Amino acid sequence: MGEAQEQSSGQTGTPHVQWSSRSAFLMASIGAAVGLGNLWRFPYIAGENGGGAFVLIYIAFVLVLGIPLIMAELALGRAGKMSAIGTMTIMVRQGNHPFWKIIGWLSILVPLMGLTYYSVVAGWSLDYITKAVSGRFAGIDAAGSGALFDSLLGNWQRLTLWHSVYILSVIIVVSMGVKAGLESTVKIMMPGLFILLAFLSAYAMFTGKGGEAFTFLFSPDFSKITAQTVLMALGQALFSLAVGVGALITYGAYLPDNVSLPKAAAIIAVADTIVALLAGFMIFPIVFQYNLTPGEGPGLIFATLPIAFGQMPGGMIFGILFFVLLTFAAFTSSLAMLEPAIAWFEDKGLSRKMTSWATGIGAWAVGMLMLLSFNVLKDFKPLNFIDTLADKNLFGIMDFVVANIMLPINALLLALFTGWAMSRKLISDQIGYPLDSRGFFIWQFSTKYIAPICITIVVYMMIFGDPIEHINLLMEKLFG
Image (cartoon, rainbow, N blue to C red; front, side):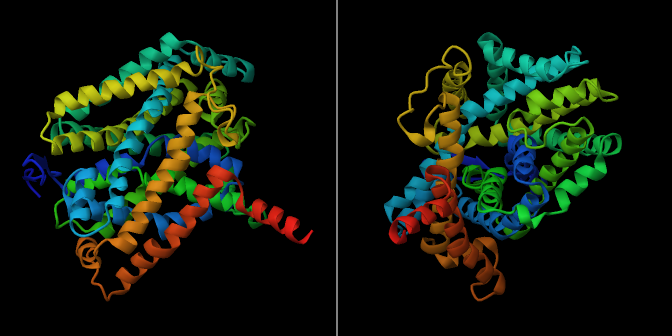
């Protein structure tokens, strides 16, 4: 596509630079989707929910819901060619109800709030790179690994160091702009991420119990499928693909009109899923080889795997590369978390550099509260009076509210708006399917009906618990 093109943002005449090429856009968008959700969350969620059965349902949701919703976000962004708030303002001016502006605000607040605690976990990864380099995992046992992780969480000064280094790096890249900052970074990090992931997965499969890992991931035991399994697979699909985060609306605004959205959405979804599966191939052979627990939970990466790194051949190198990989994945997602707010400020005619630093420092300050909730403020659990949030520290509250409530609600609103309220002609022009085509019918059916129903169930489950249990209790009360 040649050199970057510029166009008016529509509010102040401030130009938004377009992606210099289709490949740059795809790498940035894949980087926005690929993150800790793939490498940290997917393996332990799959482990907790039976492996193959969960993976099969997860892939089905990616295909049926993920791709149509990615198309919807990109189409909305490209139609408005502004920040998320600017785009929704344009949509309201075209005759839609002002209520829909909430999508714009959520599409900035969700990623920005997510960055405040996401950077804390990324900071753990930076710290663990230094631990791997210094040989701290050599001969470590379960008690030693747990103590090592607990000592990090209890050391607020060390957490502050890595949190600050991480946020500072994100600010610097975003402040440099779309081409010099975002594009230049993802062009290095994304190929590096895939090379590292392919190497580590192959190494783990050959040196660990690769056959057992493959069976675990691809031999579904349908007797293990429960309502919980289905709902967790749906939630993970939304979380992993970054649907509802708002970054894709912003990235879509920088997208030229001649890029096919169905193809782009398919590439993003498939690449994201491949990363998640390769993460399983990288982690589970090691887990089975050293008799670890697949469903270990969030501590699988930081408390459990170092035990294996300390015993396996080449474990020191593997551990270093593993946490470098984790950092790369987190970093490209973090860029997409800060960018939506900066795009909005640019709509207002404000300086990218100034607003990048101001917004980034604000995220850093809130992130300090998140990291202090593991030590200085560990006993501060302000929402104990709410059952769902009882016994959660500030980090846990922020994570739950953003990932389990705000993100799926925004995804639900996006599905409802693009499926029901947005001009059918406008959305048809953007996704490239004629109104009377089978492709448009399938997209619209998924967005109008399937996605809202499924996401509503997920939101209900996250807030109130398993709806099936509630129905059973109601039936017992009514009919004894």
